[in-house]
Structures are given as C-alpha cells and as structure tokens.
Amino acid sequence: MTPASLLLSVDELALGYPGIALFDDWSHDFAPGLTWVRGENGCGKSTLLKLIGGALAPERGSLRCATIDAQRDPLAYRREVYWCGPDGIAFDHLRPNEFFGFIAGLYPRFDVAVAEHWVQRLGLAPFFARRISELSTGTHRKVAVVAALAAGTSVVILDEPLSGLDQASLDALRAHLASAAAARERIWIVASHEPLGEAAIAGMTLDLPRRG
Image (cartoon, rainbow, N blue to C red; front, side):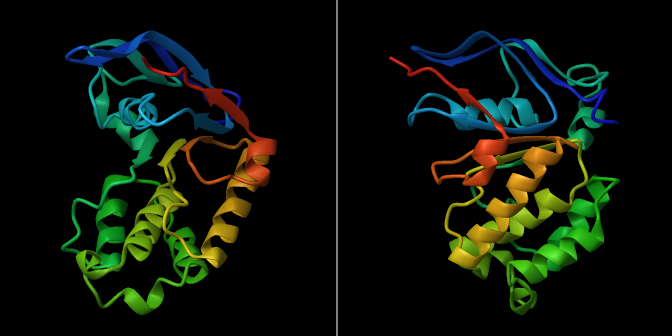
C-alpha cells in the first residue's frame, strides 16, 4: 500500500459494558502519519486501540484499512494492523529472539534488519538467553515495542510504548516516532501518558471525551 492509498477508516463503532457506553456510533479516519490519542483515565483509550487493532470485537460498526474490511477478511486486516498493548506478552515463555521469530511467521513483511537495529538501540541483546517472563517490566516492554516496529504493517498501534523505559530508550523511541510522524509513510496510532516530544508537534492529536 502506498501512503496515497492508505487510510484507516472507523465507521459507527459501538462498544459498552453493563451500565457504561464507551463508544456509540464513533467514526474517524486515520491518515498516514502519527495520531496521538489523548484523554483522561477511563475515557476508553486502550479499549479503542484494542478495537482498531482487532484484539477486541465491537458490538457494531466497521473497520477498514485501505480496501481491507476487518469483518470480511480479519486475517488480511490483522496482517496490516499491528497492535502493541500495555499488558504482558502472552507468549512470555519464549526468549526474545524466539518471540521475534514467532511474530515474523505471522507478519509477512517483518523486517529482521529493523528488529536487529532496535535490539541494539534498546540494549536487548544481553537478555536473549532469558525467557521473557524473567525480564523486568521495562525490558519486557522493549521486546514488545521492537516486535511492533519491525512487523512491517501499514498501521502500527502503540498503547503506552514509553512506559517503564530508561532514558536512553525513551530518547531513541521519541526520535523515531517524530521521524515517523513527519515521514507519513504509514499510520501510527499512539496512546501515551508520557510526553511524545517532537512527535506531538509533527503528528496529529485525537482527544477522546471525558466519560461520565
């Protein structure tokens, strides 16, 4: 997909829990570049990102990445949209390199060179002999972020990617997000309580309303 043809469309999305309507006929078009999703705790940021990423099914509404409809062809949609959530990696019995190999098998455009670059940039190499479940929260987070950056998808969704990172890693990731926002070669959707720095200036913001 080229940037000119790439658009992530969310139409009339609805989801709620007993007594709580999080989203009702919510629509938005995400264009290439970076969109910073902001809002108070409890407004539904993480839920929205899960919905867009295909990790959670809406009650109604549609999701489309370019010509791919998520409901009609969920596998093709998931291959174009990578969601990196704030919780632990489900396959944490794997070692980092094994996890990257697993992700490469799911995403045809996974870029090994990109993964190797970020492994070095974030200082992950010394932890390759250990299972992900044995890693600290920050190191665990780095593994998840590297997979997202290397997946090669048209859409990258990052929920709290800066949480728990050391300063050098924070600086590196903020710089990368700023470059991605300015380049507009793919769609980046980021929710973060941590400031994004230059990425916030180069990108766009989407403010979710307060609930209740």
